[in-house]
Image 1 (spheres, rainbow, N blue to C red):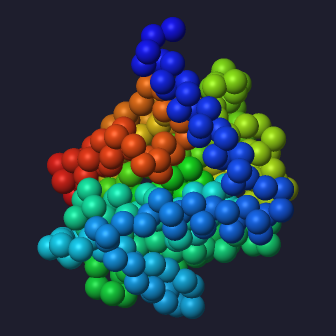
Image 2 (cartoon, rainbow, N blue to C red; image 1 turned 45 degrees about the vertical axis):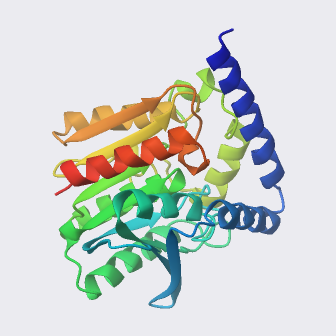
Length: 298
């Protein structure tokens, strides 16, 4: 075993242990632990946080403490399997997004399952979108981002905007998006022993909590089965060691078939939403996101 692969193996073992400390069958304790991790990892003097009242829904603005772009904005959909996660939990990502892009980031606390199953989160995402439109942003001024289930939600919001014949965002950035709740990708089984973050029992619990008895192939639940024609530019990042690898690769191929300007970077040795971690590859990934926004998003 090479020194590099040994180091990566040790890193994945560390991630697995940390994730094990956070995950809890008591969902309220799980949510609280995630918030603590997010507050710790997002604690930086480079950015400021301020509350936003999004028509009664809690939101959070993240701004870099230097001159920054104000005409354009990032709307971020946090992950957490639709059952956990929050703006506070997402700070490990939103702070990096604000720093790397020099753009303001808005994250919002959509209602969570099992208390609020589908379509509650999608309704709340639309509320956040409408909030930005009321603030005077044009649709093209918004870059929509999402990680994991937040990537699912960002795609579902795009499909809903398209269905309603509304203007679409200027671009879409997805980090380890969960696109297929039927779990039909080959990586779901092939990467099962490698993935230090996700496993089949966890995924199945999240599906049951969010989708209940609904048809899982519904595009607003599994966006992989949606119609991507006329989508704006899309950038996908995924770790090669995660069971949701094929959720990204198959989405990328579907986007290209639909004629969308799409790009995907697969990171060797990386895991699910590795961008949350405070190490070099995560920051390099964020720089790639900024580069994509500057050069490809409309």
